[in-house]
Image (spheres, rainbow, N blue to C red):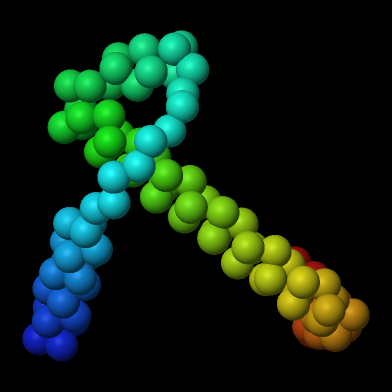
Length: 97
């Protein structure tokens, strides 16, 4: 690991801590079943708020990844003819074994 990447990782950790430390009190209504299920994992999380925030960030990351995947697929589909032509051309150079 280079000095620059170490500094970057430390900076990211500090920024991450700062963002996580800023809190806004809010109220949500959850089903009794969901609250009981969250409580089943209480030994792994400090409290329900930490559990819900962790779950929300994980879900947000899944949504962002799905957006990136959709953008990638759009790029691939937009260039499909060119890419298929390239593969077909490359296969003409393949030697039969």
